[in-house]
Image 1 (tube, rainbow, N blue to C red):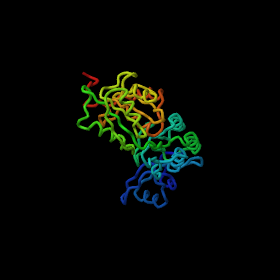
Image 2: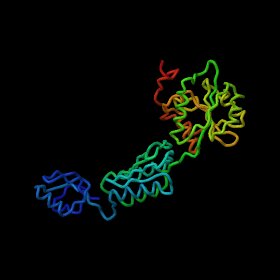
Image 3: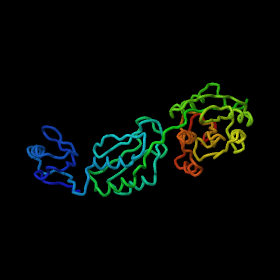
Image 4: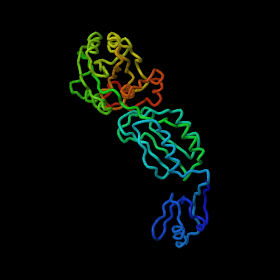
Length: 331
């Protein structure tokens, strides 16, 4: 692509690179100059303008952005593209789900040509209807066709939306005299709000004694497609009441603890019938973002994180302090 200042008499058919104010109105950058517009520039006494002119092997910015965006979402569902404008195409979610991104391939897309760019939300970010998952932007007024085609091939199908496939959950709350109080109901409302944001329902809530056998029996009675456990006292060991109850009920604990704060004291696993189970940390009583949200969302979408993925959540896992926290990070 050619770029630079040229005599106005040679500007017809080129893309105006910088807006120009004229007595009868402004010519905005990005427009392909017509002979009439060139005449207006000459009439205003302007002799030179900065333009871009595509070569035979170049693509215009809108065409290039659309080609890459279409390739990125190819074969996926739950995503729609905006109309291209100023070299940009946005990728939007059509419903609730998680942004499922092939991160390494998307890095490779951005390494092809600095004029062809893609920005996205973080991998597994929860999306609502209409939320922007990503935006493709061609920096200049055009890009080499070879670069756009290469980026499109590398990134084909790398942006998808994982829908929530878990319809509801049962919440089991344990109680004892020295435990956290749920008398105000704010904690339960916060949990219900999390489920609602995912399009899930809180199907049932059961209160039982803070005892592994009692919790295991409640798990056996749970009717939800997911089971949540909120213990009166924080789970502080893999053999504590919550994890033990899951094992007594015939399930297995995949992981206890995570490098996300708040949210350290979470555990999760699978029941004998395949349903996911989460032992919620105490911070789940607050609506503020915590590590349990990231695990809950992944399980709800049917893509449980493995132990390695949980470990990698630590970088970026220092979240905002919760004002109601009983043991703040700083004394």
